[in-house]
Amino acid sequence: MSIFEYNGSALVAMVGKNCFAIASDRRLGVQLQTVATDFQRVFKIHDRLYIGLSGLATDAQTMYQKLVFRHKLYQLREERDMKPQTFASLVSALLYEKRFGPFFCQPVIAGLGDNDEPFICTMDCLGAKELAKDFVVSGTASESLYGACESMYKPDMEPEELFETISQALLSSVDRDCLSGWGGYVLLVTPTEVQEKILKGRMD
Amino acid sequence: MGDSQYSFSLTTFSPSGKLVQIEHALQAVGSGQTSLGIKAANGVVVATEKKLPSILVDETSVQKIQLMTPNIGVVYSGMGPDSRVLVRKSRKQAQQYFRLYKEPIPITQLVRETAAVMQEFTQSGGVRPFGVSLLIAGYDDNGPQLYQVDPSGSYFSWKASAMGKNVSNAKTFLEKRYTEDMELEDAIHTAILTLKEGFEGQISGKNIEIGIIGADRKFRVLSSSEIDDYLAEVE
Image 1: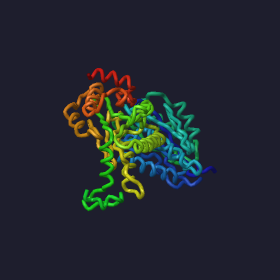
Image 2 (image 1 turned 180 degrees about the vertical axis):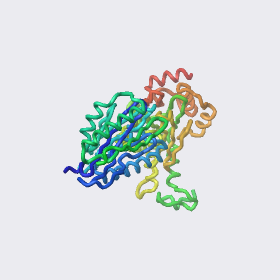
Image 3 (image 1 turned 90 degrees about the vertical axis):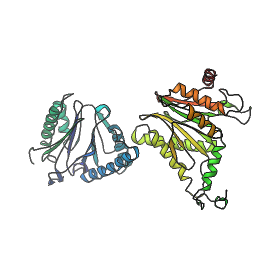
Image 4 (image 1 turned 90 degrees about the horizontal axis):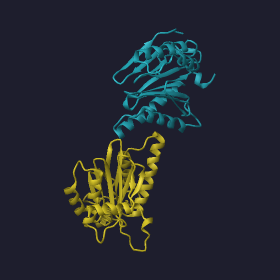
């Protein structure tokens, strides 16, 4: 079994009209055994920037701690929050620093940039960025997620519709992957508010 | 100065609480050629005298005003070679920032890092402080900005400032002439008039240098013919 499949994970982020949504599954496993059903994979960097980390859970947690550290110093020095594009470049640089002994995680970054423009991107474990205008996926269920998102996604969805779409895409994809699932966690961000919702799907 | 017993070692405070080497470094700056900067509402202008030691020197090969990044420029008063070292280090820091964040470095951050380098050389063994004060001018997301950095490593943001030989006359002149809503063109004229105040000899496009940056965020050094045109306007 590959190191990326040791814990199991599913992550997806989608762009809507002046909003974005980022969602993850909640299972933490040790190969085939389920160890937790409330594991957090999506983390807040600041009010308008979130990062989800799939792959090896320990690396996901460590990467998150390093990124929060860097962002806090940036906030103190520059007296402003990081733009999503800048943050993505930082994550990419940090991952590449470990080119020959990498962190086994794949980030999904989602944020609202200047003029409330939504920004999403993903990268591999070495920091190769992939910017997308519609959706990005990551984790053991990524192949199913690609299929589900491709068929369910429409551009310029309003927040309510975006929430429905991303939830359906996530739940149907994790049902086809034995290593991810046990419910879902969706975060919907608009310029004025942030909504967090827990989804109940097949609990297996 | 009565502190001469304590002026040998850079890293030793004198009883009056001064680092005498830094005082001496400021003297080196104060006997350098005059330079000044003015922040306008829509840009920044920096200017300096360019008095060459002999008429045989090829003036086109000398450039005192230099770029740190496409949108940040710098002029100095004091020892030219010291300023070149600082410009080199700052350019590298600006590029490192860009490599990490893929975003041009904000002026405040570059000034802070340049000042940190200058401070390092006031607290390390076997080195001496830089014999230059820098005027760093740029235009970024926070608008036009002008900073002065001293050999001690302290820096200040200025609306208009001068350094070098003629500093007190130049500053008095600038205090009288400066207005908050000055446009870049007015600032260039004021800069030329300020330099003229203390200039020995005939001022021309060949013996002063002017650098400007406007809302286009591209710092550029004016050519000598452009300077001559401005000089004609000012007459």
